[in-house]
Image (cartoon, rainbow, N blue to C red; front, side):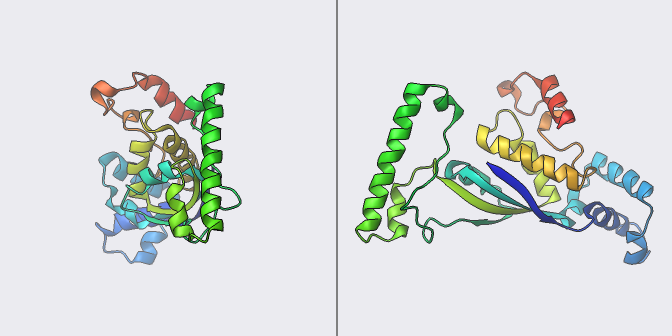
Length: 228
């Protein structure tokens, strides 16, 4: 898996702070954008602490992700307040080879991993036979597994990103999208450290929202995201 931050709103924290000030000020936008950094930091901490997240929607972040499975991307696109561009299995042929993700639980058992890899080889043979017989890629792709890798560009605003991290950085999230979310969070924190200082699973600032389904490791989780 490879995750990169392609681009984001220039100076996202300044834009968010200016939007927050605008609601309560008759100053010009240029004046609001030019306020001191110290005041900006104080304001951002205040609005984040109060949960006034609407102003975060003015900052957007675009990520490029490669090497995740279709199983992972199917979960990802359930986050509907985002924009996606995904590699097409209709227009991109995998006749030469399709790459696949192997879950760690399978990789840990050599005998099962061998059977898993054998199945992937068999699927690839059938896919190639279909292509060689003149079946269009849009129909041949029906035999491809959820394990097949994909590439995708994701754009979310900062508010939706915080919601995404809240759900997908949780230890109860599926392992692959959890890894991806943590890598995205690292990059987001570098670009906008104040906006994402407390971003992560829901247990960072309160009780575990999973209730009886909790992982039971809240202190370890908090330490992990403090060190992220």
